[in-house]
Length: 112
Length: 118
Image 1 (spheres, rainbow over the protein chains, first blue to last red):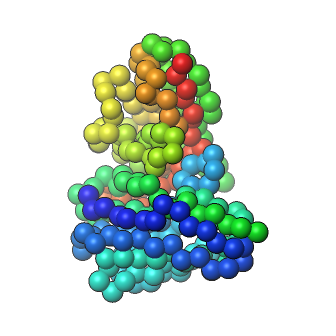
Image 2: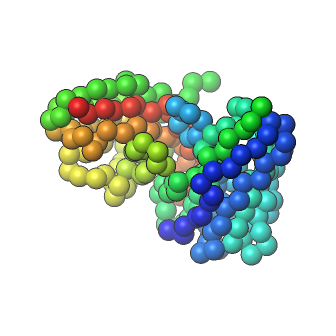
């Protein structure tokens, strides 16, 4: 399975935008890029996913590089409730049970 | 609506005891996954069910770990003769589609069961 690389931790101020980077230089053409986050003492929750084009939803935006070797999760206005561990995950498009391969993720701290 | 539920939320076991952890997935979800999360680490895949069929158990760490989903709904993860290294949070997740739809299918996680083996 292709691997992702994320910074261990990041800090942000409340109500400011946050850009969480992810490198996935060995991504294959059929790999989807998924982001999940895990709030303290909770199970992970889905944030967003994409294949080639940038994606927006109510939680965040996902910007995917043209060569697909990196992506950025964008939280437009961080709130204290966004403090969590953010995981960037590649999911193979075929021949896969759909299992998620989590890395260490990025721990996001949001300062009031 | 009801999400994925897990019980018990906390379990303390003495080394050598058997434990059973329950997962109630979202109604109608075909796929069910179990993950193990050690303290300070990301979750690690244990096993996968499509309905009642266990299609992937490659992540189970030893033959002391056993999972079942006999009617394609509720699942139980059983750990026999627990060891201290089994201490972790055990997460269950479900998704609507089967393996064919796995490439983009969202997984919904339960709150986990925190197992402590003394």
